[in-house]
Length: 165
Image 1 (tube, rainbow, N blue to C red):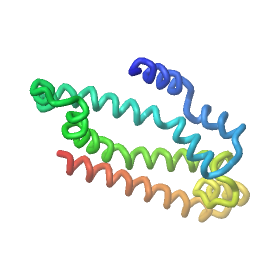
Image 2 (cartoon, helix red, strand yellow; image 1 turned 90 degrees about the vertical axis):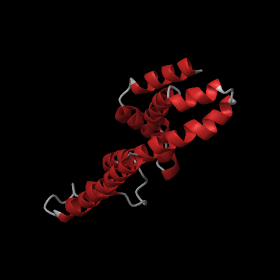
Image 3 (cartoon, rainbow, N blue to C red; image 1 turned 30 degrees about the vertical axis):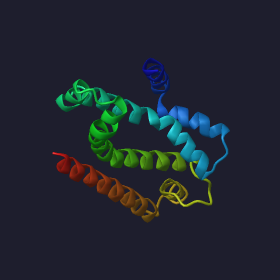
Image 4 (cartoon, rainbow, N blue to C red; image 1 turned 60 degrees about the horizontal axis):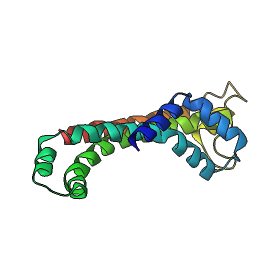
């Protein structure tokens, strides 16, 4: 199973994500649900690689090896010992993932293949600036909002990393 998942991850990561998303979005109808599905189908590989690497690291930790030596069932080791450690890693990674997906959605909406026109989007706001290049505020306010959101998410990453140590 592990080899099959790794093969699927290698296959999906061999194609640039933007190209893959644009190809899927070109044949898919534009909706919030379809955008979420496309981003989920193309972004899960990063999370899967992180969780796999972290689980390989955690299972080598002394307290997990001690629990195995005591004969504690495998599922109980996962729930009581490895899951809490893994949750800290996921909590630190989640804001970075959200920031990346916000940037991706902005890019897709800017290109016109993201959210439908009736849904407000930072990318769509930035795209309207192409119609009137002299209106600096059409770029400044959405770009500043995106920047502040990503900086706030980065601050969450730093604070969660500080709490983990």
